[in-house]
Length: 171
Image (spheres, rainbow, N blue to C red):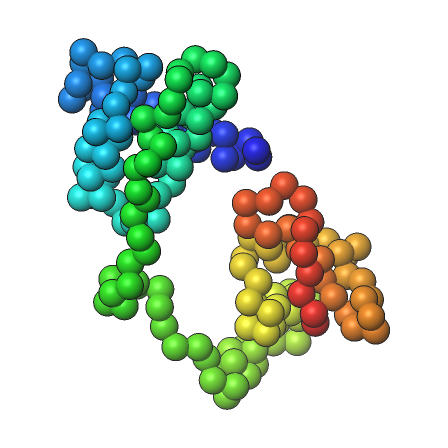
């Protein structure tokens, strides 16, 4: 697993252990029951989005699967705990918006001047507008990631959460 994932899982396990110590001081991590994990899931769902709750529970499940695999426990208390579904209410999705029209895209690109930095900025905006690349994916891109594949210019990218270049977009 990438170091960032390990760090996040450890942070979420510390939160779970802290909650457990506060709410159920008589229960150790080794003695957790399915009902305790379900209770924690419900507490998380009351304060966090389903995606955040899902991440917390994924770390707990991973920990307990590891503990079973390593022989520390006979079975995982998180084994049959259902993860929250994705939110479908469009009003609760602040980033859902209409795509830019062709005219709007051209207007944004024309805000850049003709200087060297302006050309760079225009290239970045064009990559985002026409390929859907994220800022972090563009930031990670290097000149050597530009290649020709089957007669087309492509840019190899390191996707979000990945440790190395693992896919490409056609330019």
